[in-house]
Image 1: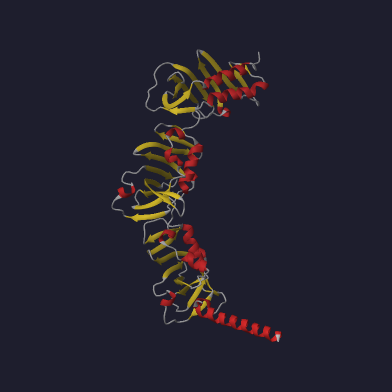
Image 2: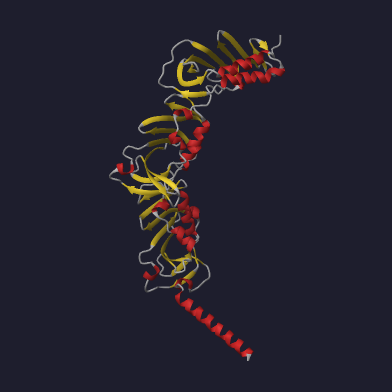
Length: 453
């Protein structure tokens, strides 16, 4: 008897499972029925595709590939996101379907294909493909599509369909300055209507600050600023052709950032009011727009630390970045005392002299240290308003074996603790501390101990 009870229970369980199967099958999307083998729909060579068009909820956009880069030719005034478009085109050139759902359907509306999302590509050989994308399947595992003029409905994987259904925002290049930091040759900043600084690159790793003074610039700080700028991108787009910029604080922007690239591209970025915290990204967003592009967007300025820097932060750390390999001689006039050093390279080995006395081998390190104290004089402030007056307290002249051949510095007292710095007869705007020369005097005393009689 017990055996029959167990058998009855097993039969009942089987009936329930069979019923559940048919119940689920009844409500499962028709996208999960039909032929389930992978079906090759498109097979084209990616490098031959030269045109791409897309129709989405935002509008119709056409792109052409020029010199290996995608550019928009109709539908909008924005730079294309080259990598995103290349990814979409690549997916279409090797498109496969999961299933055939229905051939010649009487009702395309149930698939979302009466007003579909449309993508087309064409090649230099004249081949073309058009993909119409409809709704997602009920299980969200795929999207319904048709191909070209065919009425056959297929499903493609969800991740493929999602990547193909790009919005206008997806298609556009959101980087404010889409260059490598090493490709930028100028950087400028205005804050609250006043020029803060303007920097120009003269060689690959050599920059000058051109405003408010002209002097060698701090490469480390410039590199940090450029790295942050080229990574800055729009988080979202707010309004095209705004009628009232004051709503966004862009009628009188707080910051204006200028930059120029090696290829001549120049941009001016206006940064206005703070919108507030975006709790999806935890970014404090500000309104911004590019000159010549009448569209307001949002950016995160927190990484742009240079916006709150002064010109002083971009001046070279030291008055003169000298290199002993280029030194022929230096003369230092300090408190009516003349100190003269020189390097003799006439033989295979270098010889070092101070006041025409040769330095022995043990003193070569101290000689180099002394020259370093003459060049590593730290800038502590800028003063572009003052005009230095009075006598020259200290004078240094470096004679070099490279351009410019000679560099002269004069140090004129500003107050009890600091000097104005004059270079080659022109006031630099740089301020140094008088105590910097205490180190010079100290190392000079050590150097004298290594002279040969």
